[in-house]
Image 1: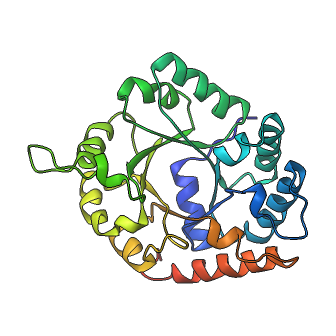
Image 2: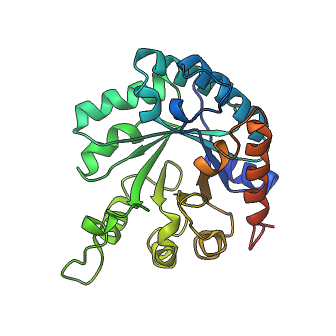
Length: 273
């Protein structure tokens, strides 16, 4: 059965759980707690315990595909099995950052939306509308376009000013916002660029924003929520390393839950009533 989550269902989960938290399962086989063997099977065991200890505190899980692909064919199996462990009412994001010509995008969309059956995938919009359209053709699935990222290199292109005085990322948002709609398209906006959120909300007032950079990267939770949340919420605030590597001993899952709870409580500022 195909996994789908509608806009209303995600909104409802946020309101019910009173959180915007997205947990990043960017599991590095070399950073597993000391009592684990450094094997793909151990990654699955680690992921299972993280999911069991945090699923009631979050509304989404984001799996960075690179960490699984790096393990070869077995890694893809671990990815698939991890996805199966996630409760059906929680959004599953494949952080793959794909972006290619139309016929290739159609195959990527098939791989992630049909084979792996995730709810959403991150995409680079750099190659334009025809590189994104094949993903939007999958009813009930979500395309998450890179808007303004939190990395240092964002200044190389995204922040460059165009002749009209607007930054390139603003043109990307304005051009792509009508490729899909708020029912099937989200945007990545880094928490370390929180000062830009007010302007971004003027361009895309009702779309969901996936916001990485809180936690290990130092993004300010209060600023993100005040500038980025709509009356419905429409935020997914991701934390990966700060949660999954909160502990390095046998109590790592309890430590992960503690950190996830702390982040959840910090989201009370200006939260949806």
